[in-house]
Each structure stands twice: as structure tokens, then as C-alpha cells.
Image (tube, rainbow, N blue to C red; front, top):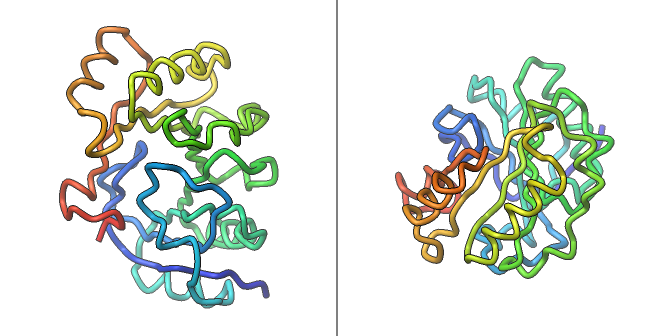
Length: 213
């Protein structure tokens, strides 16, 4: 049985994606190869505790919750993440993966809902985007663009068009809290008739907290 380094496991409302508002168990893996300028989970870069996969699943199942989100950090930086998700699926959970898009998603179980964050210019990590991942997306998957500047917005529009993203998956636009005025972003989306879902991080509105608890 494999093991993973875990920063935290907690139960809260999903704050993002197309399951926003649903009670969810979050498994936050430790470590990330990126250093995005707007990152709100830098505490997960280091530390954590090593846990066997069966112990992780046992803790998750204490909550009696169908939805599980595997996040980070960058969860795919730990190879055991793939086995963890497969076992959660086999036990009947609906599993989503929050990934940066910088690492290969080809081996992710096709039952997993991939929420892939393509890094915008203001992140400082746009050069790390692995566009080959787009061919591994299905209609149930989502690509997220975190918008902090006008440049981010224009860049995201161009990427959507270049890769025909609206034809292969759902698209999410999320403002950087404290940097991009949400109403301004919403009005741009409407004006340009973009085929995207606008979202605000629900957990930050409810608890003013990055962790959603």
C-alpha cells in the first residue's frame, strides 16, 4: 500500500468549480513545483505528514460524504495521487482533481473530474502550461483561468479560441480576490459573450479563509 504526504484533510462546502456549494471532503497534498504570484495555499508547499492511502481513505469516509476533491499544492507531483483517486472512485466517491495543468494528466483515471488551472500571465508561471493536456479533457472536465489583470483576460480569451476549449470542456473564470474587481470581470464576460462560467471563491466570502473551513 502506497503513501502520500498530506497537508490536511477537511470537510467543507466546495468553493469553486461546477459543484460549488456542495459538501465536500478535501484532501490537500503537500508540495508544488510552481510558485504562482497569486497563490493562496503556500502553506502546502512544505511540511505535511506521511499517510498510507488506506489511512487517508479511512479518514475521508468518517465524514460520510460522496464528493471528494484532491488538491494541493500540486497533487500530481506525488505519483501516489493516481492510486488514491482510483481507490476513492472504487469506493463510490465522486472525485475531482484540482491541478495546475503543468503536469501530465494522461494517466489520471478517466472517472475523475479534472479541474485544470491554466496559468495566466500574472501568475508568473504561464510558461509552465502543458497544452498537451487539453487533448485529455472531456466534457465533464473544467479549465480554470484565474484573472488578475486586463492582460490575463485578453490572454485567456485568446487561449479559449486557439484551443477551441468551449468544444471540449467547461471553462471557468475566477477573479483574483483583492486584485481583479469581480463586477468588472462579470461585465466583460457578458459584453464579449464568452462561453464561460463566472465564479467567485465561495469559501472566501463565507469564512474569509483560503482553506474553506
